[in-house]
Length: 330
Image (cartoon, rainbow, N blue to C red; front, side, top):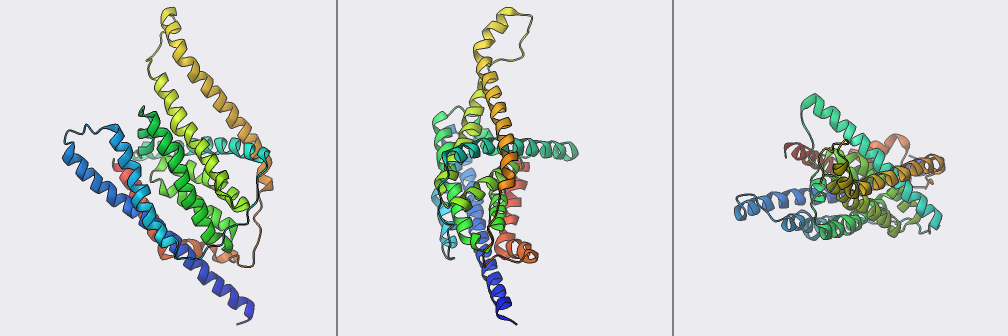
C-alpha cells in the first residue's frame, strides 16, 4: 500500500468516525425529545383530563425540554469529536440582501413541493402528516411565537446543524457536509411538510456558513425566515379568517371586510414580489456555487457509504422516521 492510499484510508476512517458521532448526537437529541414528549403528555393528561391545556403551557412544553435537556445531552456526545471550523470571511451587505431574497424563494418553493408531495400521499393513502409547529403558530400568542419560533429556534438549530455539524465534518468534503447537514436539518423537524422546505433552506444556510465560518449570517437569515413564516404569515391568516365567504354583491359586507382583507392582499403581493426577486437571484448565483477541494476530501465513490452507512447516521434516520410516523398518527 502506498503512502497516499494509506492516508486516504485513514481519512475515510476518521471521516466515518466523525459522521458516526454527529449522527449519534442527533439520535440522542431526537430520542430524548420523544421520551420527554411522551412523559409530558402523560403528566399533562393527568392534570388536564378534559384536554383544556393552556396554550402558554403547550408552548413551554414544546420547546423548553428540547433546549434545556435534549440538546445539551446531544452536545455532550458531539463535543467528543475534534472540530475544524471553516475559515472566517465577511459577506458584503449586498450579498446578505441577495441571500435573504433567495432564502424566501427557497422556503416558498420547498413549501410548494412539500404540500404537493403531501397531497399526493393523502390522495393515495388518506394519511396526512401533522405539522405541530404550524398548529402552534396559528395560536395568537405573539410573544411566544417571536420568542421561540423567531429567536430561540434559529439560534439553537443553527448552532447544531451548521456550526456543530459542519465544524465536525466539513474538513472531509464541504459539499458532503452541507448536503448531509441540510437533510439532517429536514429530518429533525419530524414531519413531511417541514422536511422539504427546511432541507432546501439548509442547503443555503450550510453553504453560507461553510464559506464565511460565521454563524451570525445564518442565524440572521433563519430568524428572518421564521418571523415571516412562523409569525407574520399566521397573523395574516388569522386576520383573513375573521371573515367567512363575502357576498360581492353586498356593498356593505365588502366595505366592512376591506380593512381586514387589504393587509392580507398587500402581504401576499409583497411576498410574491420577494419570491420572484429571489428566483431571479437564485438563477444568477447558482452558477457561482463552488466547493473548494481539500487534501482530506473523500473519494467520490466512498462519500455515501462514509456519510450515511454508519451506526450514528442509521440510528438518526430511523428515529427521525419514527417521528414522521407519529406525525401521521396524530
